Length: 488
Ligand SMILES: Cc1cc2nc3c(=O)[nH]c(=O)nc-3n(C[C@H](O)[C@H](O)[C@H](O)COP(=O)(O)OP(=O)(O)OC[C@H]3O[C@@H](n4cnc5c(N)ncnc54)[C@H](O)[C@@H]3O)c2cc1C
Image 1: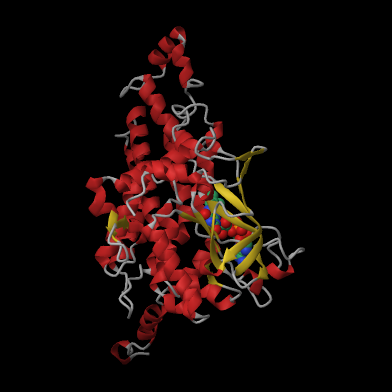
Image 2: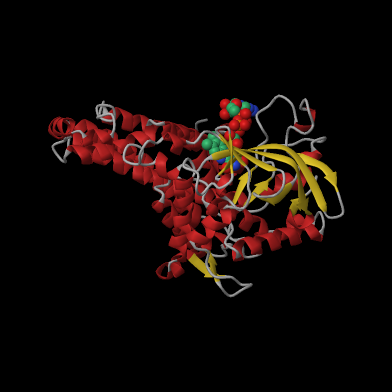
């Protein structure tokens, strides 16, 4: 199969999927005014990857077909392979300024991780490991975009899945047939789902005995009968034009609640079935969570680079760039960005290779970076708000004010900066506000806090994987030091 172009991708999305938005059922997400620009942004990523001069950077050869396929689907077996995955994700993240979190390479990383350890799934039967391997190969060879919903709905967190007031609130199995299973219930929060080909449904939250019906891992086509997508409100819809809302208008990837209304799933799409242990182990005894979140960090570092670039330009415009106090604050910002940048490189250089030749990005660096992201991200945005003063607010109401000659003259005269004219200044500050202050910007803060789960859970992961033995050995060594000069 040849590379998938943006046009092929956009055409394939008009497949009868059911998306509920603003009281409408949307038949075609690629033409609806609130949704089409993000679809085009995803499509551009396919075009970038398919460009002949990007072949080496963006593709590798499928061992099944001999054709070029996206590096997002390459299972890393060496440090160089992981670097190649990073460069792939960096290219896409730079094209979207790190503002689209769930591009195809995120869940592709999870699928690579499952396929790297098929024997884990075999413990429940060869049909499950075959399903994992063959879906991975199809997704890779057909350049599929898979999104995921792996967190139960926030209906009543005080009770386990099977004790919710209705057993079909959380997505779970309601029927088994010779050909497959039937799923009913809801799961959150599938970012990008309305633009994807398949949804991976599983559960990363801890489940307990009695919750077996919810302990599954499977994929369904987004257009499957009974799949209903409820995206949160569209920020692109609120963007009156792309000058005043340069980011909302282009990169609103959407986040959807997914409802499975008795969806039939054939066995060949089921990786884990009513199995508490495997449902848990798929995340931690395979490199799936590490590959998927390696992409998340590549994307985040790119976004931070964009963010600090905005801060630098704001300082240049306000004439504060050389101010020693501003230099100190910028130093703090640059230190935080550099920590994330270098933690990402550390995932790669300290990544071990297992006995099957599969490389696992370092857990402790990944989870440490993610654990602190929820706090550092807020701190970094606070610095930018501080540095910009009123700049993002003291602007004309919209770019349309330039259409009025009298207003345009005033704006050009009074709203310029020493460094640039008023329109360039306004364009920059609109980017900064859309990054931080609009509803799009605010959702991004929530995303950085929660895309990898609540931070208390990530901190528990760091605690689980930290090398306390080496640390406590040092303490034991200190306690065993002989007395100085024979004194106790
Ligand atoms: C914008 C966005 C996009 C997302 N995209 C996806 C996606 O594509 N796919 C997907 O599957 N998920 C996605 N998620 C993540 C996911 O759906 C959840 O939001 C995330 O896992 C956190 O779970 P929750 O929201 O149910 O919070 P809860 O688990 O209900 O926790 C809420 C808060 O309660 C407190 N709390 C609860 N329990 C404890 C405890 N034991 N100890 C201490 N404090 C506690 C904490 O303050 C915690 O932050 C996304 C989330 C956001 C915000």
